[in-house]
Length: 371
Image (tube, rainbow, N blue to C red; front, side, top):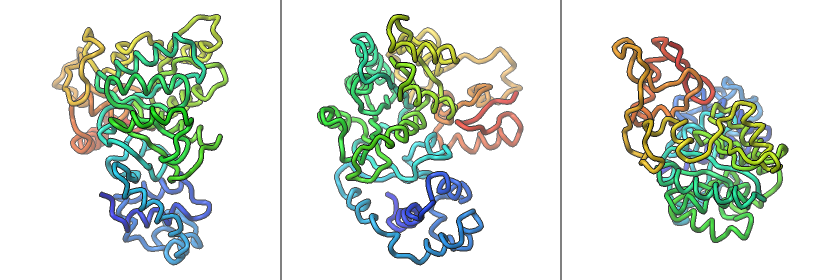
């Protein structure tokens, strides 16, 4: 469990005027571990880029503790807590983002974070076809061992959560505090999600939903996932914002094609023109992510299972085996871990060694193979 003094130190830093997620992550990146903040002096924080007045205030101003008691109270509730970026079980893929939220409030089962994650988003007013496809595909992806991530909104989001709870685990990322369910009609669905999945929020308990919160929420949905599946979306929609964020973060983007006469398919068709992967089923998504051997069914288990993926016909003796699991484009650490059947603690030192040997390079979204 996170130590109270560690949470308090980061809380105080986050409460400084003008200090947002980017600044917090820049400071975190200069520390060997987030816990190192406990031994930092104001002078050291200044050397990391914090303004002198802010650093002195962090060390001395007790008013920066305001609100911390509320965070502590949330941690006392059953199956509730707070995650700190850079410390497990906070999703590593999300923590690598420049604007990752420092704190994530949760309610539910943290085991949902131990599986590979796939996001599914789309219209709040989808067609019956879009609703059915989202629910069925989410159920199949969840049954295959993925955690389905969405935003608890009406329409495709709700269908994705409903399908996923039938087959496995799901995570709902909120544009409010973790105790404020929006829309209200999804209160029952939220309770279902919490049984075998999670409600996540970067906003403190009691925070009401606001329009500005939802684009912020979308970066979390895409940032913690291997890829984003867009089911139905108009040309100007929040789902396309999520897809754009996913592409910028080095994640895969998948889009469901539809009738050319359906305005809700126009956004998906634009994504496909821009390079998104056209998908028709859960099997397409699993195959594209290399989470199952070629020819296996969509229902094959992914989590905790070692799959033998086809290797390139180059001499295996000349290429380290771990390198064969990394693409020539950004490959997230989560994907590499799944492909190689290595845990993250086992994987990271090996990736560093391979980077030093010139086999790969760390890039936004993960690692890229160089040769």
